[in-house]
Image (cartoon, rainbow, N blue to C red):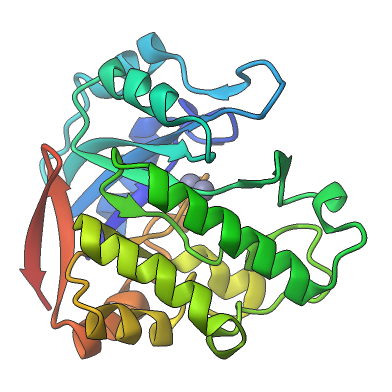
Length: 260
Ligand SMILES: [Zn+2]
Ligand SMILES: [Zn+2]
């Protein structure tokens, strides 16, 4: 099994150090993992959510395990206006894998209450999807779109649910078409299962992605602590096996296809 989305204490919100995370991966029998620490810029704020490059190298440069391949990546928080910042941050290290994620909409962290004030759930989802579309249109430096439908697990969500594909079909199609055009992949993020009852995003999104010509798919737990490493990876891979017959890992920004 694989887990290509996790955070160690190199990330501002990680709870366990890289060695502890790798040991957890080994204990769970994972073959290959990738650290994807946060580079997230809150509009107007200090860079509190951006990892320290020296800490990154200190944590990973000498990190090996006999049973687990360890890749190095990052999760960049895309905004419609931070394309040049993304380019600059790509120079921090030689990354195997780069997730592009959307955590903010209209300059507000969608995880918290202020974003949700005055919006129905449908409206909150729609604005987030519009922002995601704007981001994938302008950004090119990511390999895979992280946790599409992340809004489903927002702490401030009044009634957590997976984002219904049918309610937002047209805009989701636009997002997926751009990913296909640009040769980008889509992640099945398992952290939604305990928060909203399904994967981020769920199987229907991947069936549509494949229909539109999408090929690159990765699995990630988004673990911020050792106990969630690889969580539900087997269930996510069963979905990908059914739809694609494989899952991807990355080395040196190139996808590797593993038959399931
Ligand atoms: Zn994220
Ligand atoms: Zn993450």
